[in-house]
Image 1 (cartoon, rainbow, N blue to C red):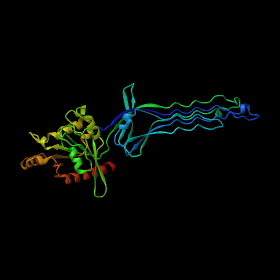
Image 2: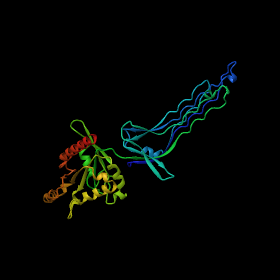
Image 3: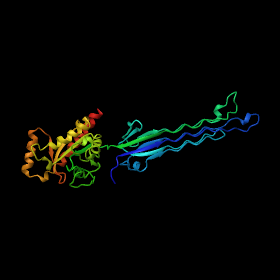
Image 4: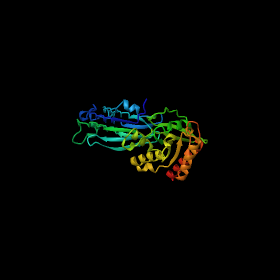
Length: 342
């Protein structure tokens, strides 16, 4: 199944129940006296973050969500039952936009990032008052009651952005999927052709003290990604959530006068999509060094030193240099957490 990270749905809250027109049948009381109860409240539509969901797939299958209406009031001052709320579960990291299709605009209404977090999308209508509320000295037998208030209806666009502390980025075939499978329990699809990764893969790296670090293997991008070329927008929107970026460049991309030009290409796409992404701290690594001769590897290391570049040289396939890279990921992530909390 393809990773589903966007859906457009309609949500409708329940109508309020109608108030009741009823009278007691007692001697010496005109018409028995009014005793119609109030109508019940209509159900809300509530979104709740579930830890068991990873995609918006279910919302692509069902496009309309309607809460039930409140029950109408009854005689003997009995109020109608409030309708149950309709709870729609969504994955962690879901953004919800309210659409104005006439104006062709949208606004961000909710950003659901915490497990169990809830957001009320549409409120149910209030129940109408029964005729017992409208008795006066001049009208002792009112023959009217309020109708229930209508519910609300909204069109919503749901978008999922992964919540990972580390984003593994790079050109297609940089070895991102291989790296995440090597440092975590994730088992993504791996193959030597562009865009093997059509959707982000999440991996959890376990620390010695039981602390976990979540890393995401983000789909590769090409020049023009900020304009939506290739898998550009799919790639870039998920990067926006991460604290730290691990930027990979395949060894075969290091030929030419500027062996590290591939880093610059990806960085430029980040800047054009969102200048804030360019400020995200990066750990840079040349991957697949097992394919290089010792002489060529030495040349690349010397070129990095001459240019003052902090670049690691690794082989995700065979594990070369991974231990130090993971240590650097832990250290930089801890530093960023501390800075953001302080």
